[in-house]
Length: 222
Length: 403
Image 1: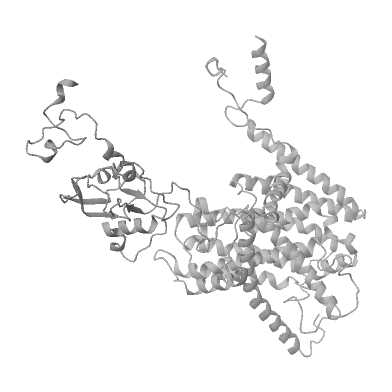
Image 2 (image 1 turned 30 degrees about the horizontal axis):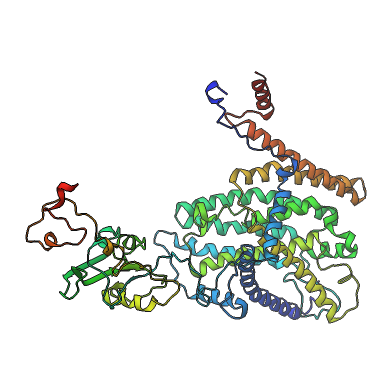
């Protein structure tokens, strides 16, 4: 051993010497047989009889998606594209549409919302990204379909999933705050200066709600 | 045996019936052994095992058989067709042929109906030699299959199988030569009867315990069973020599392997454990009744089944040997030991010592086994680059702490 390898942090381990009994294999074989036969005689089966017995899934299990509804049964989604942007598998495609004027709490809603369950990797990033808790992953894991189109989930299908799972104790509504979700409560945030220029006639430039970038007013206060 | 040579017809009929029964029964038995293996392995791994087909999964072998029959027979384009098709046949043929001289019940006992014989070819005086010569032919199936597959994994598997079988033939044959010397015959029925007449103290295991262990180990290697299944190891060789086989041809290989297992288990029971004899249950010279021979048949088959269960348990217990360990076990341990064992029996027979001297002698042989292996292991360790002997290491450590 050279001087450099004699550091105290390094522990040199030699493989244990094999004695008489170890090299005959007899005790090792008997010990192994004892272990396996103990499993035969005192058996605690871990197999689950799947189709008959459903598995107990953890609460954070990530299965098929759902689109939540708000208290007026409208789709909660505001077509902000955050989920589609966050999605690493690129499986979400949304077409936004201007919200009807009587929907005072949002600017847009999804005209179409398509989620390809075959492309999805069930990572849950969309759920993390959604500012209004509109998209959530449920416990449904046994998804089947007869064609690729069957598993291309549209807005209606995703809303149906919500209707099916809203009463299920395994899929509690995670939204507790605000009408639309946490993002809708951020009304008192000071608006910051524009990161990019916004046309004067853009609706967002005139809005008083939070998160909207505008050019006039309170820059001096910062 | 051929008492009525003037009229060979009954003899011929009996033989044909026995062959039909054996050939018909063995695939079924093999199928159920596979179910047993799957069930036992499942229990050892805290699983349930096949339980869907029939009550408790008992019809699973039937489903397996139908599946294998109806599966597509894939013959890859790059194989040597004749040898490729011949190999599984050889595998089964040799396994069944070796079974011809193995008695699987009380042969020639009073009370057994004349049409029941429990052995296909009775009175073969070279029984042992026949089994080993045919058994070593079985490797041709493996070698041909591996070579004809024209695939590097198959060829490697076949290469390993041939090296392994050639090595383990020697200890396998020599471990039973001691029995042949003690009994003075190679006829399996006579070997069995001599032990039975001696009672439980006449069982050969008392005189040849080390030979029994070596025989069992070497026959595991012969049958390519774990822990010696290097020829087909799934992890390295993707099945080895049967990589390219599918459907019924693949099933034939497995039929061969399981038939081999049955033969080995019966042989171990017959050669070392007194055949159908069991004290208090099946003794020699009982009254001639149906019950007595059925019990004797049951005892022998139970012994064989016990050995099969041990083989299965071993398979799911021990990891596979490394190839150098496999060869070392054969050439450096088992061959010298079996030679020494043979020599011991020869001395005993020549100077007419009591056979009981063989028991302490075998214990000595076992001690020699351990010592040889331990010294081999130490030598192997010492030959490694960078090896520091523990004593030297301890000395340096002591010197270092003194400063």
